Length: 191
Image (cartoon, rainbow, N blue to C red; front, side):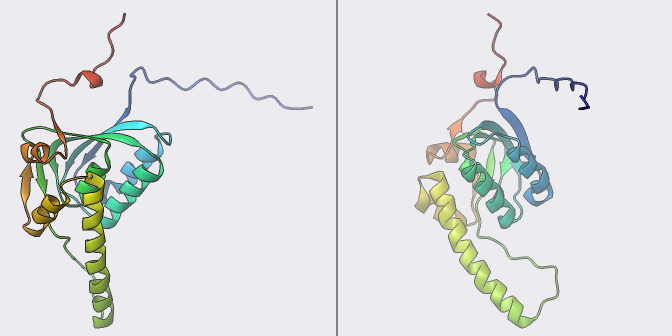
């Protein structure tokens, strides 16, 4: 005799409509597992809004998030609520829509090598070679992801430049939002 299980209750539906909202706050590396899980929860080709307030982190973490977003075709709106610096720039640049405020801050700089391990000279030399190649490739990718102002971005990186939201808008890399509610983020009025 076949056993019939009781029907499972339907999962509660989220009353809120619209894209998934994700907060990327703090070091990318510390938040990588959560960010990866949240991005994997979005259907391929789906939409989300990512709020950025991050000083950066591992370039490998940044590359992983960029790869997930691109390979899954995620259409993200990136909103910088505070800082978006260093490695956090790559996921922000991957967003199909980028929003900043006059108070948003970005730090562009060459990648920094940091090792807390005791390694031999041969491994250090190989790491140095790899790191120089990675830095070149990541700088080119950043320009490609932003899609414009590549020479300006290269100059910002070279000079370790702090850039304001206004400068990002002037360079054509983002759009400006005042500190007023964005209509597309508010619930639709019952009609």
